[in-house]
Image 1 (cartoon, rainbow, N blue to C red):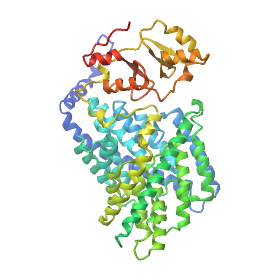
Image 2: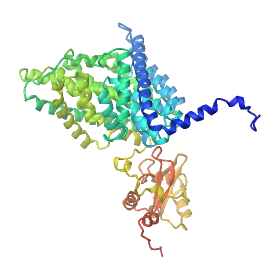
Image 3: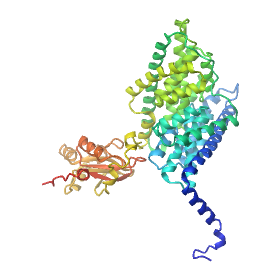
Image 4: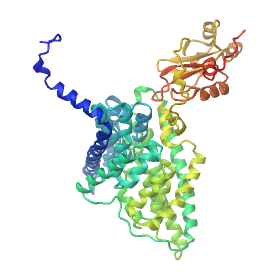
Length: 579
């Protein structure tokens, strides 16, 4: 018997497993390529199961000729039940899945748990089947990335390799969800990685192709949309496509601002109401669905009708407005589901409406409305998601028609220009910021080997609780060597305050709690991977001499502090001592 009471025969299986793990770590590069194949196959099967489960459950809940009450009660009941499951068991399975995947890649060491994968799969399936008009592609991205994360960690790969597997799983998910393997590669590099020259290109291509092959073999070769061949009728159409780009950009901005504004309001409600909040989206969808059933669900069938010219102008305009509010409310209130599908739906309706008007006014110079619906899909997708190359290639792969490429590029460029001017921050980055997650910029990601804050930061020693009064705070810091202090509450750091602010408030006779003087989300800070130059810039802009260093995964999690003296000494400058 061994010292821990375990017989040698009871651990006979450990030696070969440890030996296998050691060999796998020695051949990490080869294992990575094999994993790309495995991830592609598993993600392809998961996405196919996701699609089939969603569609079949939706058909059972909404049979042809079903009672009208289903359209009202099922979205409400579904959002209530799934809201509780998300709150109680799967808190990381809310929302789209794309911002969560980027957060796992850049802020959480590539970690997505199996519980999150399972919760995302089943909760999103139930949500969409109940009629909530969100998409399945974003959740598929998180499921694919989660499969990659779990496999990589179980095989004992280094954290860098595990993180590199996440875009591999994301590409496999998009390839199976849209039946567009090339667009999936571009999306993984353009949106998830933010780098079209990423070193994981080969593995991303391999996983995308494998997932696409699984899609072809299991359910068969069924394109997402069946569309006729289009052609440019007259050069005058280019101006109409540009106008469609303008409309697409404006609708994209309205969608983004409405979603972010409503979500910010929901996030302000007490924590114990989170499980009930999704009912707001379900109730609105149910009321709309009572009168206009086309609002329910993703609505890809109706998109097919628009692409083939089988929908009236007034219904298309109505659906643009109704879907805009139904989708943003459903997402903002906390339902599980993405914005890919809704972006394509709204774009198709918008493009179809513009095309119908153009074809009515200039029948000899314009194509059928279906062509404009197709370009509208790309324009709104590019404006909301900010992935213009993915949009062009995706629509091209859906139609396999080169004639649509130039109109797509024109509309996408105009839409992207307008949306980026009127809404500076991309929607996925803004959603992450609302959750207290700050994703790194391209400049920060390339800061390897350069000066970083993490090398000069040190633990914080002087913290002020948010519940004390301004007068109490000033008394506590009278003998401090600093002129700036961090304000904390049970969440962690929530703000920064300097001596002049405290003295001004006391002189004005204010005796308010310290927490009322700071903003819990918008306060000066830096992250460990950022440079001292940024810390110095934020000190100067906010008239402070201490800046908190916080985690990218949670803005309230304090990693340390950096002082003005630390920054100057990192550049070889010794600041003069205060008199």
